Each structure stands twice: as structure tokens, then as C-alpha cells.
Length: 209
Image 1 (cartoon, rainbow, N blue to C red):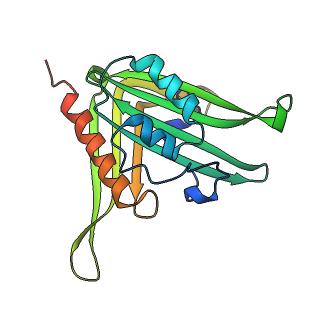
Image 2: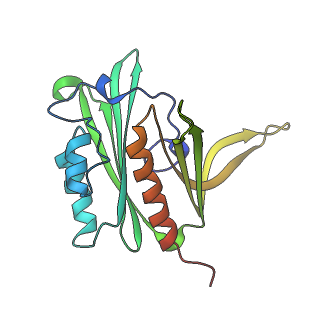
């Protein structure tokens, strides 16, 4: 499990952005915005927090590509929002995540858990890009989904396995980062932006020495 508490970045439930209690234009389609700040302010619920955290790490380095995501979890405790910005400069992948966390001592009962992770592109050992291509009713080709997988050689323990004699061993897997967009989750513009992001990352991952 990574520092963000979601093993392999797998989310169990998706709903559309309008289901999120939002202020202003939060949740708008960000795919037409080429500047990171404009896209973040259009889409994320806490743009100032995200931009401050990202800016402290990116500094003056140029942003080559980015992708954004929000996931709404609805359960017995109410609605919580998990947000992500993944940014590629020339040498690094910078990930910002936030999630609503229950805190009975805080006004409103929740706090925002905001965190940043920096992955050198030189440590990325695998880039996988999968697309779903269909046809429209007119017979034209249509991009219906994109899935991106990035892995590093770093091993992460995810579960403890108990053997027949009562001994326990750890089950490990590679550190991995997954991104996805579809017509129902983001729309065609965000699908194309995710593919653009994946290609920029892949171009900058160094080959074997």
C-alpha cells in the first residue's frame, strides 16, 4: 500500500462530478484548458490547496502534461471526495492527492488530507497504454476509453498470507499508478488529454543503459 492509502490506486465506486457538493464551476470539463492552473480551478474542489502543494514542488519547471481526476464515494457515513492531479515535467512525475477524512474535533467533522508524491521518471520501469475504440451509429471510429499503467521496480507489501503451519509471509507487488478515462467518466476530451499525458511520460522515461 502506498503513502496515499489506496493500494494500486484502485477505486471501488465512480459517480459523475455533478453529484459532488461543489462551489462555483468546480467539476467542469477541464480538457480544454492547456494551463495547469486553469484546469485545476475549473475541476477540483480545493484548487488553492492543490496549486499551492504542486507549486512548492514544481517551482519554475515547465509543465509538459497533466491529468486530473475526482472520485466520489457514497457510503453510510455520507459523501467523500478523492481528488488527484498528476503532472509531468521533464524529469519527474508529481502526484497530488486529497481525500476527505473524518475528524470529530474539526468544524464540520471532516478535514482534507492533502499529500504530494514525486517519482523520478528514471525510476519508471514500465508504461502501459490501453485504448477502447468503437464506432458511432454513423460508422465513424470513436475513442471510448483510455487506461494508463505506470510501474516502478519498488516493491510494496499489500497483504499478509498465512501458511498451513501457521507461518505468515508477505505478498508483494510492484509500486503502480493507474489512470483511466471513459466516455462516462470524463468524456472524449479528457480521454485525449490522458493519452497525451501518457505519451509525454513515455517519451521521457529513459531506456536501458
